[in-house]
Length: 179
Ligand SMILES: [Zn+2]
Image 1 (spheres, rainbow, N blue to C red):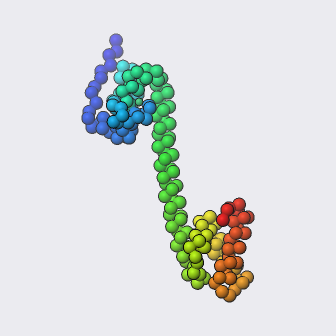
Image 2 (cartoon, rainbow, N blue to C red; image 1 turned 30 degrees about the vertical axis):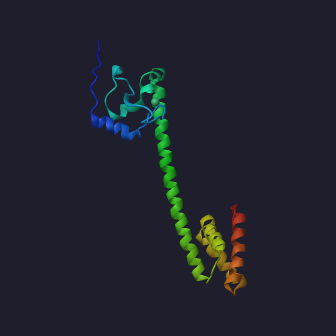
């Protein structure tokens, strides 16, 4: 007869599992101090499950004992896989937010650059429009709108600005972008 030998988990390993799982039960999402957290074997020791960290999961008392029995192992695996996917998506979202921030910052310095080269002294609302236009349309489209405006109306910065706004709106409309 096969007898599973349950080796106690080291404190270090328990801590690693808790840290990996963000100190919340991986089945119900509750965390301390609301619930007492245990380390659970995904594949039970009685069925040959090991003490490898991949086979260990943070579980609250309720999920570890009572509810645990109503879960099938494949469902547990699914829950864990989904949680991992969610984590990955959260990381992706964070990266996209950071990229967006960088893009916004670049648009801001491009807007300042255009103001300098066309000698524009824009009101805050107009400057925001320019910044948004660069963010939405890209710097080269906006630069082009100004170059065309200068060619069309020449003269004063305020004339160039008005014509450039018209040009940027035209480009936005043809791209289906709201400006
Ligand atoms: Zn739980």
